Image: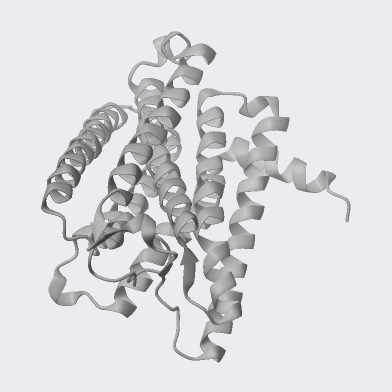
Length: 309
């Protein structure tokens, strides 16, 4: 048994066992990351430049794009480097930083999606109080709370994980440093109890956000279904569907990644699932929002038309 800090490096899961396939994975990750950078960059520019998007939803969408960019930039560059160099190593400090920042951005995104659900609830169920409940100061405070909570949570989780003594080697069954896979290397009973407390806190926090989202959408659908005109119902649903699609994709891939039965677990399946919840959503989120948000589509058209050809 030895402390993880005495390790010089960890071994990540190879994306493929042949150099040709590793190069294929490199180009695939490059295409996904460029698409995510371009799409989220356009969202950020559109929200910043178009005054029609200077709304609470536009503000939260800007923050969501920042978390998506953070997730992509935390995990993908190292995986691409390893594929190109035909290696699987990552330094100890690099692993700590990767685990911390991934958990920071992914948890901040979850909290932001919960706040965006509240935005939709107020807009549809309490439209007369929208300006009061979601003023610029209130939005700034809620976004700051999401970022601060994500930071403190990831700091607590990462510090506790990397303080545990390890006795199962240094090979991680994941293409990036993910805390559950690092915990599998530990055999400390006292550390296990500490981590169990952190996980219980995480579960309560995550479940509380989930219940809030479900309750909010139940109220939203009850109000929308009472709207007499079909056009009114369609307009109300169109403002909620992008957020609901993003939340569903985020939760379904994350839950399957962490709660899938051990009987169906395999390195190849784990790799596919981890890519689905850590790499694909940041590239798809801007597309989902831009397809259903007319103001955002108009702002993106204006922005693209100004670009030098």
